[in-house]
Length: 118
Image 1 (cartoon, helix red, strand yellow):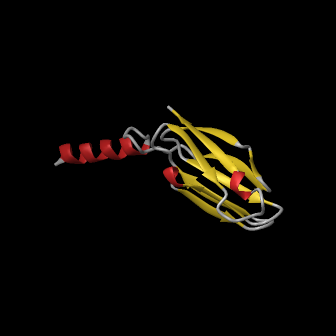
Image 2 (cartoon, one colour):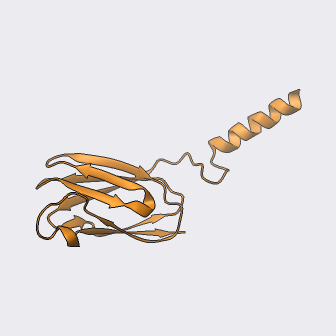
Image 3 (cartoon, one colour):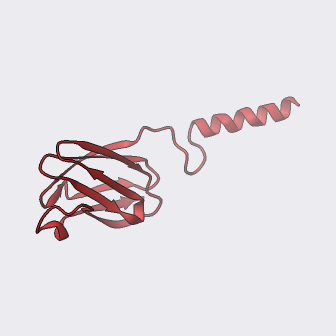
């Protein structure tokens, strides 16, 4: 019986220290993104595969959105407000997000590039 209790304790400790793939006790990396007609600042960001990331998206001019389907990112932000979206990239590559809320004539060219590295 003590053997099984020891195994369970070991598994709990391993999960707590992030020894299993896909588990981590690290705080998410926080990146501030400002949406404005007709760009995101910064326009490109680099994150690491498996590292939880929180994007803090804000705007001061009009409502905007951000969608990156491949990474499961979808958020809208109202004028003068901020919105947080948290994701954990599971694949390496370059992903292009678009503004998801029509914001004027330059809306179609408004993008945020996310590079995911090992």
